[in-house]
Length: 146
Picture 1: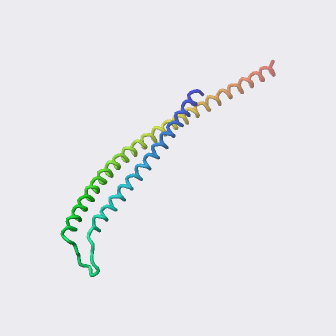
Picture 2: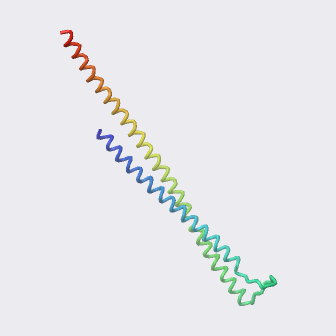
Picture 3: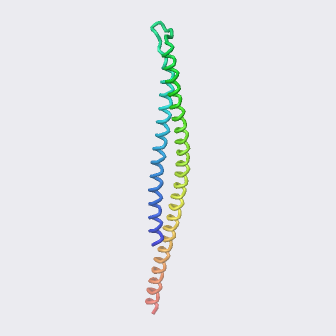
């Protein structure tokens, strides 16, 4: 009985850890998606840095070309930084996924052991009840024959 209670507590702890890891993984995936959205938006900004006149011809002064080049350079640095952060976030998400799988396995193992212990307890209880019933039957039979 004491072992079953301990296993139930352990199972509860494993479930809590599993839920926490699942939540962390979901947050990490959202972070990865935010980085990807940032990268896409920055790439769009970099491509929109040239201004077009009404007839579609590019009209850029020399100083504006230098500004555009600097702007694109800065945007590219931010893109590179966001891509690096995105890669790191994906690596962390992979680690969290592995951790989640390991915790799920541990929780399942505890659940199986708990179920086995409960079945063994039920069998022992059934045997004990059967012995008591048999003992009463023997006593009743002995009284009748005596």
